[in-house]
Image (cartoon, rainbow, N blue to C red; front, side, top):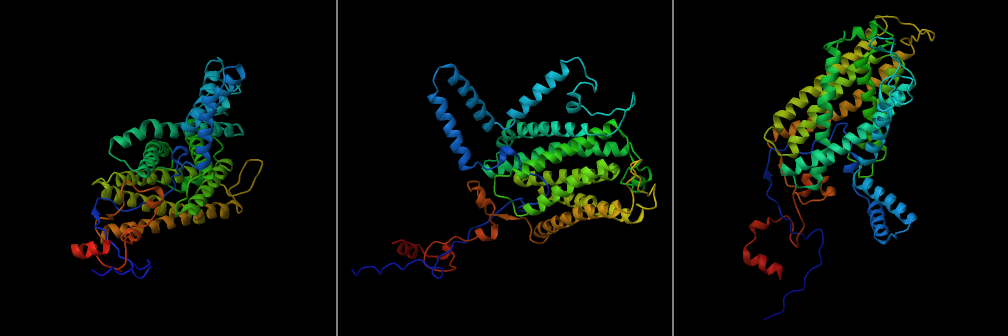
Length: 437
């Protein structure tokens, strides 16, 4: 018996590829768009974080019994617990502040903690409120509140429900946690914004009243709480985005740009009294983001409702983020000068003038550009859904986060051995046996 021929070295020209059989699902593919920022608890764990955690555990095991060692042990225990549960530190801060405020017996604005816990600048015994520097304290404190709320809900409520629904992939669990939290938040903020709009002169996105009553120096209690709470929510998301430790997604630059523009709009509209414009833009983002997160969640669950929910999201996105926003942009060009006062007067805080007009237009137009970019992403997903049928998904639940980011097209083949572009199912058993040897 002659000796078998020597094996040839592997090259790109003599590979045997396996064409995998795609399983049919209700998925519409990756919906990698929108302005939802990953939470602290869903960030990827770095090697440095793991090493620090191991050092703390080792120090705890070796701690002595003297007073200083016990204090060090207490400190290391707290650090390890806060590392494992990101909501612990915000909870402690909130507990201290709320306890001190409610047990003080003084719940008026004279209490220095009032500016953190409740809105300030109430006008006598009315429900109207002015504006001032104390509002920054309210925003800062409720940034801490939203940090706690997000991390606690994701870890203690949403994660167990996600696992109970049969989601086993570590990557999908993290993404589900983020999207379900977004559904909860926007499920409250969207209707709250619509409720405030309904009880104002802006119902159904009227544009002329945005300028007719300018400057809106005073706001109703519900309006002010909603506006500042939204500012706290977006500022908290921006901080998490800055601290982002995991690999950013493909539209990371657009996401950062969107948050910068949004924060500039929030700040400028509040300080310069364009809050009615801000209210309408808040609602356009919140309602469309609710359906975006809902469609992503259905997609992760491989639900039969994915396609209809996604179509509802597309309709809400086009109407709110484009039609309504473009109407607001058009009103800046046509009604900004003609409705209400159009004069610059620092004494009366009249800023609706020739200086503010281009600034308002550019900020809203910049937001529209990001939305148009995401609309292009939506269009590609919609094309796959309508013209290619149900999306094929070759990804398995055991794949790592990095593998989740690889396009499905790149995963349709896997190099095996010496022959190029041969379907392994077509190779006779004896040939496969010979190649194995």
